[in-house]
Length: 146
Image 1 (cartoon, helix red, strand yellow):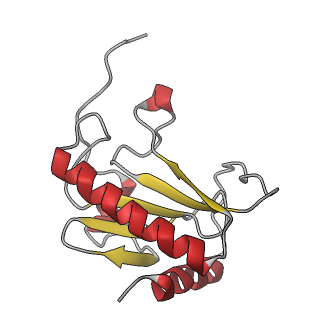
Image 2 (tube, rainbow, N blue to C red; image 1 turned 90 degrees about the horizontal axis):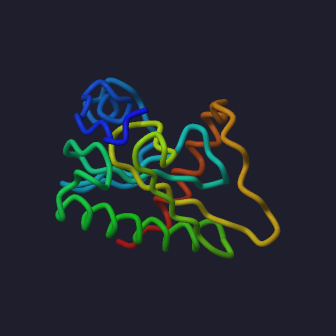
């Protein structure tokens, strides 16, 4: 077993394909540096991902600018999600390398609205209903400032 993390960025990962327009997504927010879109296997209603538009495997190799841009956008999405879904709280998660729970090797932050007494759904690998994801994306976009 290696103790050194694999640090090479693989531009064939699913998020890189989304950024290139090769795969669709339910976009929530975008600026020059980041893209936020609905997680297709949500662990809760309104579960969104925030990613940098430039290549970064994870938190460990990202630049300060990438981290700041992702954090700023995650806060924006979290505030909108609280309002849009009338959430009681927000879970923000970020995983690094396989041992840390990372599955897609492009830096991403999970923003998940939370509700008192409602546990996160298990990560089953099953995709959510696309119409529901589209509706959640619209709900979140409507709650963004501006």
